[in-house]
Length: 231
Image (cartoon, rainbow, N blue to C red):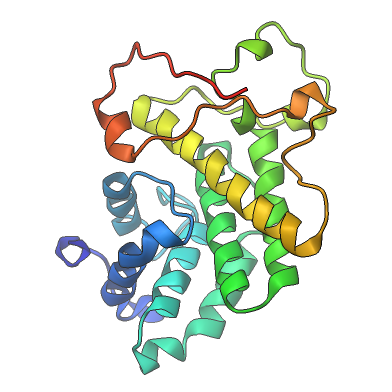
């Protein structure tokens, strides 16, 4: 229960615990792909967000925004435009390699929020941003045997993520890709435009990442597990 976590309530994060609990109650329906327990612990240490917080400001604000959207509290609802503004501004910060997956989560959450609000074009912009980050990190090629020995040839090779620290970390990356895949498909269908992720004519863009498991599966799997890939 998030109310048991020492979340700070101050300034712009007044009444943060109910809104974060609201977020967690709806997390499975809005593209949340991080390990819940680890996320809550890092969130508790990131409110209010600073330059040294475990989570970037963009994800903290996006989480708060979704929580407020999902609550029925009229007082919290009044803060929604300001929270959205802060979330959007914080996305312009310089991309920290240690925060790439968290920035990606923020983009996915904002995409769902804007789609839900009927702001489809703006949501499409963030869906495209999420797809760009995913490709730049090669999340579409997790454990791909076809990548062995390939030399970087495009700008999609710019963001080199460090190896995941454990199976949960890798699971977050697998789940991240497939959640980005979903919002990319939403946008592609609505706009009747090509997918930013699936380009069959380009071998470097073909998806070769494992199907996702439930997060509990990543907690239980051994470190020597070899995931089957999707071709």
